[in-house]
Image (tube, rainbow, N blue to C red):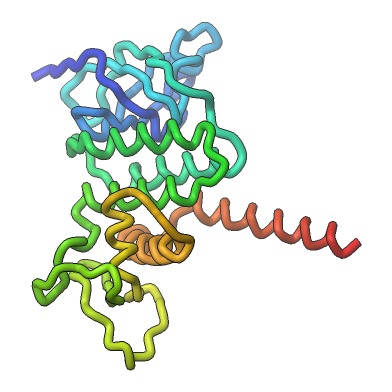
Length: 251
């Protein structure tokens, strides 16, 4: 049956050339999850789609078809905010890569769309992006069923803010023995209950919680996605920037 969807809110998360003048695009939609669409003639100079099919801002898309690759019928710009720049741009690219690699086709997750909307709008003007990225990561991990429970530990006890826990991928939190010598690695992290609550409430009150959230989310993501290209590029850019600042101060 030839299915047709009209005026669906979406974010463009990836695009690749298709034959001479068309594009194959990946969008994450509000009500229909991730979709692969063929945008015919989108790369022609006179195409109306050239100024519409841009990432990091909400758009409206309509499509039809019965195969995995459907045909884009119409696209329009919903409006919202300016494109991010600098580190914020890399952060937005990182978000798109996570969504592309963690979600399945047509797996509807309206909460992921809303998380993208909030994150992308914040990245357009934010001066500090770490909290934005950690909150989005957690919402994505939660929607995909990867994040650990923030209410109860492995023994069924409520998570306490002043207690330290060991967390492993695909496992509930375990209370850490204060005499245990633990070093964070790719298999487990040591984290305070207050950080789990901060992630759950999307609000960080300390730099310590931000650092712990980074370690936790990175472990959980690495377990599912061994290679995250945009994060590697951002780390390389930050290393180059620090190196240049060091050279300037040494002169």
